[in-house]
Length: 327
Figure 1 (cartoon, rainbow, N blue to C red):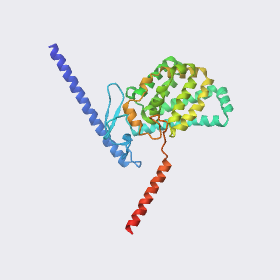
Figure 2: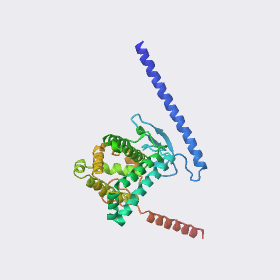
Figure 3: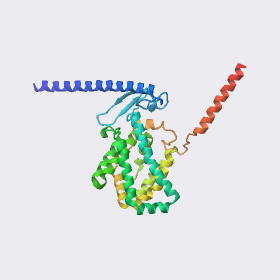
Figure 4: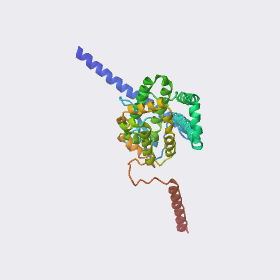
């Protein structure tokens, strides 16, 4: 009887798993239909998912399936591609996260511009109005977190890299309870950026594994600068300017000892093995132009203006040849 009961239980589990798979397949098919309808009626010609074929980049091809591995995360498969991408490119989520990210960068850019014009005055402002400045920054982070609350992802559905950051932020909230609200809010924002902006995530996955924890214990600011220098050497995209601005503002950590200690503890806690790219990441990151993913010495970034000029010359040449043939 006990053996029969065990077999019955296994059969029920198999049936339940099969039923769950069928329900997921039906749900995804329904989402695809809604996506097609929205893309048809919207001026921007996009649906809920950021899929804009035709394109050579796998992440912009038609989605064929989405799976949820038992260990966590989300894998999205694209037409005729073996390697899945991390996450699910849901249009509204991507746009919301992008808005929040741009607002944060605007704040940092404003601070950077102020430092560039008058460094001494800005430092004095931060020192004499430290409490007001901190209150303003905290309020901004909390409000931006509130902005993404509707599209926020479940922690277990983040990719491995984002899940590791989520874990470390949770530990920080325990170690520094006075900052729990701000830490939780920044955790939510940062993990969503990593999940939905692979340009940032791939760059971080490329340079952070080279972080030297022994060197960081001696001088955390210097070690973070080294990571940003690596990114600046390898990155020839628009992110270059952002990384450069962040690097120049790192000296502010020296003005606040407790914040410097928090940042050091944060980086020392990260498991760098969980940040590294896997084979799927390595496959998809290569489609991000103008980044030296292979770390070669003779890397040459793409000159888009030259490419456009050459293309125009080729098109004009073909037109002239066709005219000559017709004559």
